Image 1 (cartoon, rainbow, N blue to C red):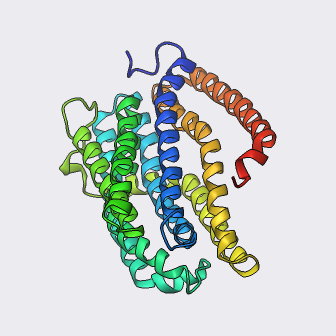
Image 2 (cartoon, rainbow, N blue to C red):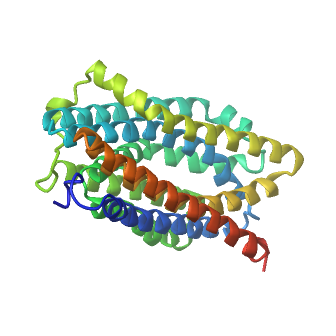
Length: 345
C-alpha cells in the first residue's frame, strides 16, 4: 500500500515522498556552502578560488539540464506505466533513460574538454581566476557520467515510492564530500584539486548506490540490460516530457553566463565571487519547492496511469497551495534578515 498511490490521502502521499527529498537536498546545499567556505579560505588565493568555482557553475547547470531532460523526462512516464500496470513498459523507459544519460555524459565531457579555455573566458574568467576554474573543471568533468547516472536514475527510485532510498543517495554523496574535503584540501594541501577530487569521489559512490538498488531485490522495477537498447518512440516521449525541465535549467545556465560576463566587466572577480554566495542562498530557499514538486511527480504520475483524475486534481491543488504559502513566507523572512546574511563579520 505504501507504493500504491491510488489509495489513501493524496496530500499524505505527496508529503511522504517530498519530506525526505527536501531534507536531503537542504543538507546537500548546506554541504555545498561549507565546501565554498573551505575554498574561499584557501591560503594565498585571496578569494579568487571561490570566484573560479563560480565560473564553473554554468557548466554544472548545463550538465544538470541534460540530466533533467532524461531523468525527469523518463521518471513520470515510468510512474504512469506503473500506475497502469505496465511493468515491462516502465522498465523499458527506465533502461532507455539510463542509456541516454550514459552516452550524453560522454558527449558533454568531450565537448567541455575541447572548448574549456574559450568557454571559461566567455563565462567571465580573467587571467587570475582561469587557473582555479580550469583546475577544478578538468577534474570535475571526470565525474560527469557518474553525476548524470546517479542523479538522473535517482528519479526512478523516487518514482517507485522509495523516497528514503533516494534521500540516501544525496546524503551519502554529501557525507563523502564532507569527510574528504578538509582532508584533501588542507590535510594533503591539494587546494582546489582536493575539492574537485572529493566531489568526483562522492559522485562515483552515489552512482553505485543508485545502480545497485535499481538492479537489486528491493526495487519494484529493475534496471535490465535487455532494455538498454534505444527504442525511438520511447526516446521521443522521454525527451518531449523532459524538455520543460531542460529549458528551465538551460535558461538558468544562460542567466549565470550573462551575470558572470557583466559582473566581470563592471565589477571584476570580487563581484563574481559575491554572486556565487547569492546563488547559494537562492538555492537553499528554492529547495523546499523543488522537493514538493519532485515528491508529487510519482504520486500524480501513478494516478494518471490508474485513471484516478480526481486525485490528480486534489494533488495539484495541494502542492500549489503549499508552494505559494512557502514562497511568500521565505520571501518575507529573507527581506527581514537580509542585512544579517550579507553583512561581512
